[in-house]
Structure formats: C-alpha cells, structure tokens
Length: 111
Image (cartoon, rainbow, N blue to C red):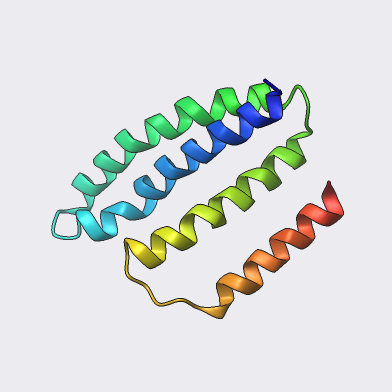
C-alpha cells in the first residue's frame, strides 16, 4: 500500500484520539477536578502519539514535513468540527467554513 495512504489513515486515527484527549473532558469529565481530566487526557493522548509518530515517519518517506503538517491540520479540522457539533453540541458557525476554505487554499498553494 502507498505510504501516503497509510500515513493519512494513521493520522486520522491519531486525530480522533487527540480530539477526545483535548476536548472530550469538557463533556465527559466536567464534574471532575482538572487534574483528573489532565491524567485521563494524557492517557488518551498516548494513543495519539503511538499513531502520529510512526505515521509521520512513514509519511516523511514520500512527503515533506510541511506537507505532513498540512495533512495533519486538514484532518484535525475535519474531525474537530463534527466532534464539536455532535459531541459538545456546539452550534454550527460560519467560521468553520472560512477556516476550511483557508486550509483548502493552503493545500492548493503548498502541495
């Protein structure tokens, strides 16, 4: 399988863990102390790093560090917006559209 597809798949999973680590505690641990939320988040973030580090090493064989970072940011926003809407029950904002268009512009001009 092409290394870029492996990288994108692993970065997608990594971003799912990252989103839950960074923002999931706002919904699921909001009645716990911040230290409990931090420790749980660090535990979740371990899985993020176990996927992200090898994904970037694999991806660096076929892409630049800048391209990997742009892929990461596109995936991050693509995962965060549904998470914010569905899990955190935040209202949809036009800012999401503008941010997505800016990222598409970044992809277009950098890649």
